[in-house]
Image (cartoon, rainbow, N blue to C red; front, side, top):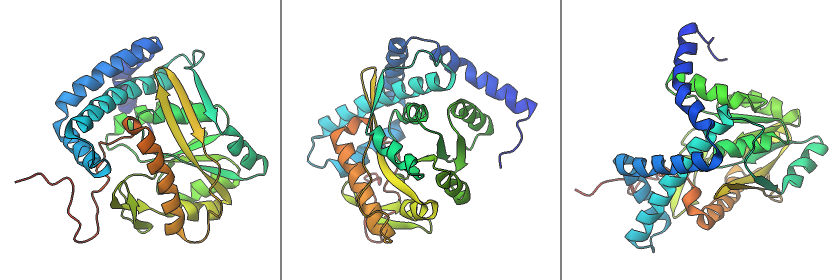
Length: 300
């Protein structure tokens, strides 16, 4: 349960929202241009984050030249800045002027719900994931799984923006709330693609290394009597393309590690098709099996 929003917190939230609201009021072309400029600046200021990206890309694309990987990082930062500004529109913008989008495979989600099944949208951390959640919420009640921000005012601001579109926000450790939503034939959006070494984790091959991966999605599908649908979000200039893949046959099978491995394969294929759209700044290989050297270690 979230703590009450105090007067001080409301004031801090209002102050923090002033710039995002101004950005949200821009036409989409202006938002994207401004965001790309912000990304260009971030690429030059965020040295530690760039180092993480360099290490991740060296793992994922070892055959690429260094210059090719650096060019991808610059493109990714531009997309990241643009995605942030587009996310501000989703939180505070004029919802009567929706950017151009289409959803491929929406029938898979609709078919499951027509049978009374809940849906787990197995997504990933990509540059445009904020609008990816918003667009699908226009077609079904969506509950987004989230991790609270460490700063209370910023967390309240983010929640305020997201709650406009969502049926609910669910803390990532609140399994009961996820199951309730799924058994009500609602949609649970989750992005379990980051480093995870909790009780429900296993080392699963990902982009060239055994990555500590959350294996709870198949178990959650069984508990919620739900179907898991891989979900991808892409932006081409100002147009959005979202893809809901059909369910993987035989998932859940009772073997959480094998099922999760199949989901990870789908994600990896998407990343290799559109590498600039994936969030490379996360230390995805922070936890590794004994004896596997960290890719983030700087040379002496």
